[in-house]
Amino acid sequence: MPLDQPEPFTIHVPDDVLTDLHDRLDRTRWPDTVVGAGWEDGVPLPYLRDMIAHWRHHFDWRLQEQRINAFANYQTQAGGVRVHFIHARGNGPHPLPLMLLHGWPSSFVEMLKIIPLLTDPAAHGGDPADAFDVVIPSLPGYAFSERPITRGFSYAEVAHVLVQLMDKLGYSRFGVHAHDHGAAVMVRMNRLYPQHVIGYHTSEPGGEATSTPSEEERAYDEVRDAWRREDDGYARIQSTRPQTLAYGLNDSPVGLAGWILDKWYAWTAPPDGNLESSFTKDELLTNVMIYWVTETANSTARAYYEGFHPVPTGDAPLPGGPPPIQVPVGVIQVPTQPIERIPRSYAERRYADIRRWEELPRGGHFIVGEEPALVTNALQAFFRELRG
Image 1 (spheres, rainbow, N blue to C red):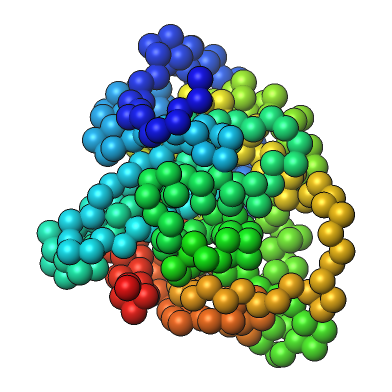
Image 2: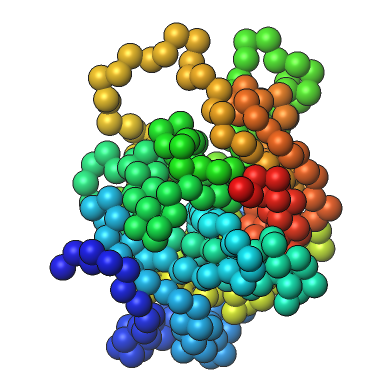
């Protein structure tokens, strides 16, 4: 039944789903491994065994449900799709509406720690004038949002859904912070619906190449090419054979955990080599649980397939490529991810109005969850001059 108006949503996974999970964890058939293998081979067997033992015997999903349900969760229909989202009102004179978009293999739970910092800055030593109304959707296909099963449900379609969601909440104009798949969605939103976007803040601006790259751009191209050789096998599989992969990930919680944790380690790149210096076991497993209990390993992988196989529109390509996007942009660059540290000249060919370009002292791909205070400071500074 379509949800014409947002309705409160409480997360409660049935007991039999948790019992089934425990049975599967108990019956894991472990593979062998090369002596001395480290993360370069994938998730090390001793590490994953330890993580799964914690998942089975110590992780408390009901406690995590309480933590998530402490925020105002909703579901509603937007753009023909049922969308789950968190909506947290700001405590200040004129809170600015701000949408936070996650990526893969993350989820809305990555953003939970930053909510109180953004909505109530005065309670954390800040200026109440910097308050935001925060909206955190689960992208279609993720978590508790609907899983589209029609071909051609692309990033542009997701952008349409999210604009409709924000309009339903009474926000005709709003700011956005996004990375990963969220950033891919925002390229389309910034082109198709720029009138709705007050400003766009991101750790992954992307950009446009040129036939005459600078020395800095050539150096970045070498980093990108090395990353494609060594690190983007996951994307190649998900963009070409997501259905085949889904049989294993949807059936094996250990397989799913390995697939997800591989990226959380590689893309966090903790300086001391210990992922749990950046995220606790419970934080990592809560994200894995979101994928497991909603059975969204397949639908989230399909986003890669749709991105690599767009449905033809019949529109002729624009001569010289699309024009630069005019939406005001703020960029944060994280130190541990060279592939994401795109030269500013690349980004300036895509975005005509870059207002801030900030180097963060620490953090990786999942920067909102890893360093919420740093991201909060950056967001407040960027949007301060855009508040009406």
